[in-house]
Length: 533
Image (cartoon, rainbow, N blue to C red; front, side, top):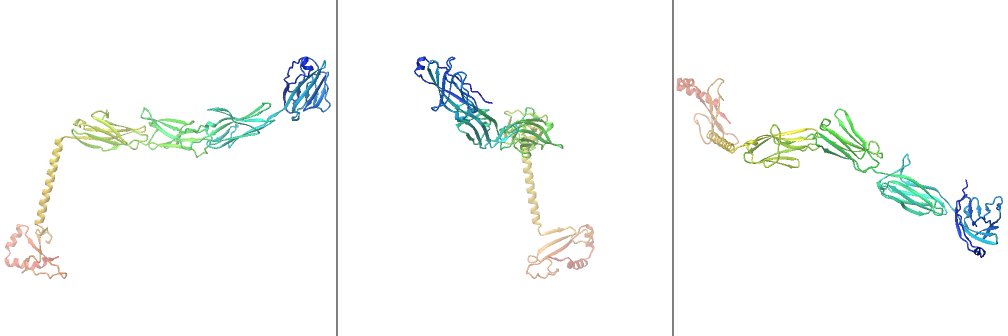
């Protein structure tokens, strides 16, 4: 369908004197697109119809006409002069562009001239834009990744010329002219693109003659997956049997899916809560917790394949305070009770308590509470008998309560002195006994009593062994024959065995025996009782 260009007619008021003298001419600018119908105005003052109108282009006459009705153009000719002297151009082409001059002869031999500039424009056409590297979603939105280098291209065609411009509208700022230039292609790049650069990008092409413009826009999202894992932490609540677990994964775009889950005893993995957010909280009580329980927060993102999710976790442990269960203090001095708590997860609230009723100890001049790392200390000043008794180091976390029982014994100075005296007495007694035993053994070092060593079974007598060095003494030298010396040159030790009566009965029998019989008995038995070592 051909378009008719609406002409802005210039109303010229000419005086007769100016018209007769030839006057001056004014140029009117008319724009038309190829294929349109262009009407170039000439004399438009009143209802006067020029008797003759001549149109010239570039100094050459292109058509003449005048009178009413207007001259019709020959078949195939696109130009025609209307009754008011205007020039009608059908199906404008770029070759029709140029400066036109209209000469009109009015009644009374008056003349009139006017100039018209015809500009033939087209476009912008075939405007296109490309952004990459990027992924196109189903709704046409483009996505790229944080830190990448993204190229932006805008192109189009216009006649006679065009201006290309990139514009941006984001959440944080807008810029209607990121970059602009004349030509058929406009390109720029964003290196290390950040989430702040996501928004609506527009490619605008504007014909610099007709001022017509064409826009093309698309949404660009900058995806970001943090390299770090989510942050897991716990927050102790006012009720010590409750705890809040927090999981955060800030900076991810689009919003990740966070999930809190845990291994339930005998039930496997249990999901507590799951939500599209970058910060997820979970509150549990003591009945839902147990020793060794592992709570895990998993972060899912549309850019992360299944099984590659990032996560953080915490393993829960009950408190277990440790320390010396028995402590002794001297009356009037100071004593420090210490317990150590290193196993509790989350950290336990550890306090000192006194007595079976576990009265809470209030710090002051009497009781001083302090902490050094994992050591919790209770210092009791000016200890008295009233301080004697049981103390409890009580550790509580959301899982359980565990106590260390410490018994304090207070001793007076008299009991200490009595113990010292008893200790000294026992030490002296042991030392004296050792001296007596040593002296006795030393004095009897040449005699060894063997109870019933050589007697017959049932014999009540004992044997005494005398150890005599053969070189020092000669016992019974005449009656006991000497043993031959050992070939290695060492002296031979003689062992004499004497029969010792063990009862009055034996003494009587010995007394009743004649001397001759006793001598015969001794002489008969002595050779058998000699032993050589």
